[in-house]
Image (cartoon, rainbow, N blue to C red):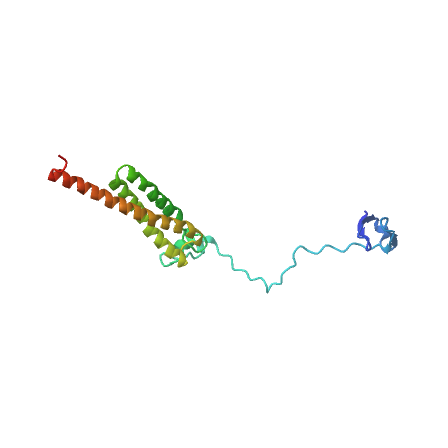
Length: 189
């Protein structure tokens, strides 16, 4: 059976019968003469570890494994629901509420300022208060920091929606009070 040997000069792969091992051969590529030697055995894929280096835990059947008591484990919700050790951020919710509060406000200017102002105010206050709480939790290391930008954007839009919604609610209420006073006093005759 031919063996594959390599030329020490040009590293060309040569096929030589086993009978030529230990004799002088010439490389057809570079014309170098060398002694044909058997190829070195391939190193093992992984070196065996000595018994002292490997520490294994005793195999315990699943029925006998101790499961932690989750009522006493404060980090359980974060490990279960969060990414890593974090509670998942809810920035998308606060961003959506902030956008809705800003979008509803112009409808109040055109249609019913009091009704749409109250809706905008409620949505904006929710995004403002809850987004602010989540930002504190993110900065405190309790919530996922990847949601900070969305939470901050929702919080800012909540501020805008609260201000515009509050102004519309005030103006709408003032308009309603003005109409009621005018009707009672007979100012519309």
